[in-house]
Length: 271
Ligand code: NAI
Image (cartoon, rainbow, N blue to C red):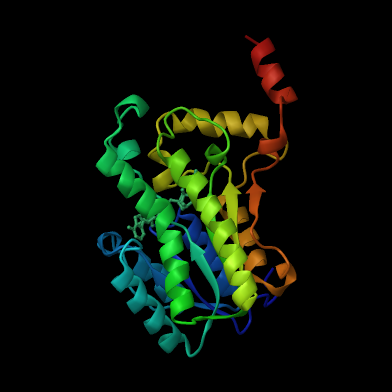
């Protein structure tokens, strides 16, 4: 299916942990479409060893970086432009983590140190990435930057906890930096709000199987898979979406605009 959509384009992909990661699937599609990129993840994630498999498949180098650390990001951006031989055309921020969710703290008993961490890792890091890119003038004109969000930024979901605030902040940063980067350099900045997906980050949320099944029944097209998300991200990196910026783009099979669906009615009536 490859169409060389990203031929000659260079970028950085954050967040490929294992073969289920949305970033992993994205790396595979971007590679198939002719894009070249550096892979990065938190130093601690490197120990899992899997990212090297992906790097071999894609002919990519790996540069570890904690996305909350400015020195790490400075090193990542400067080395990436050096390795890739020029400025960048695309960046994927596919990073999320909440210690409160991980450790099962109730929303009425949050650890605020951990909440700071959730916001720093899952939202502020997006600003840090873009500020570093801007300061090093590392993006090409008409480049595309994407982060991944979830509909809990707009609506409540039990057990999503402080990640809801992180996603709301992430989407807000996309709008504010999108305004700035568009004016400065015609760089576009968007978030993609993805269906619940069975990955390491996703399965950390309590009752995740129920989330998946409910969303499946509430989405006329069903839940969007990680593979479909990778294809959407690739299209957003391509020249075919040059005028799209400062948006939160729903990639959810129709979930977010469904009030009720026949599948849910049938399930309730069958009881
Ligand atoms: P994943 O667990 O495969 O990816 C999360 C990544 O964040 C991991 O690679 C992890 O190492 C990285 N990370 C954590 N702390 C970091 C740090 N300090 N510095 C750099 N990287 C760090 O899970 P998934 O689902 O692929 O997550 C990717 C993005 O998609 C996240 O933003 C997540 O919130 C979002 N998303 C996921 C959904 C799901 O149901 N899985 C639904 C909607 C959005």
